[in-house]
Image 1 (cartoon, rainbow, N blue to C red):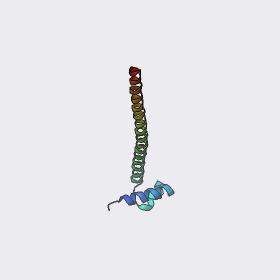
Image 2: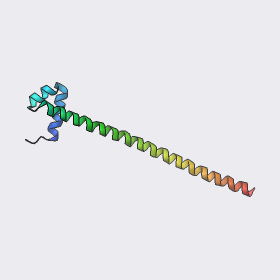
Image 3: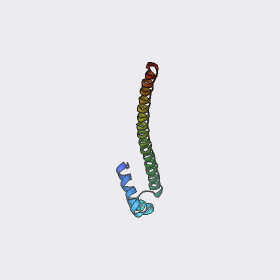
Image 4: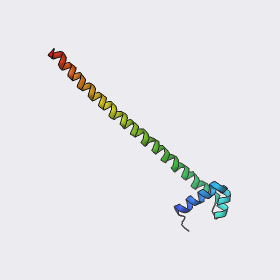
Length: 89
C-alpha cells in the first residue's frame, strides 16, 4: 500500500492527540515510522520558519537600502548646490 501525504498528515494529527505509540497501534504502522514522519515534519517546518524570517529581514534591509540611497542622492545634490554657491559668490 502506498502511503499518501494526506495519510501521513492525518496520522501525525492523531499522534498529537493520543500519542505516537497509541496512534501507530491504531493505524497498524510501526512506531518508528511515525516518529520518523514527525521528525521530518518538524525539520521541514523549522526550515520554512527560517525562510520566512530571512524573507522578512531581506525586505527590511531592501527598504533600509532604498532610504539610504535616497538620503545619499539628496546629500549629493545639496553638496553640488552649495559648491556652486561657493564658486559663484
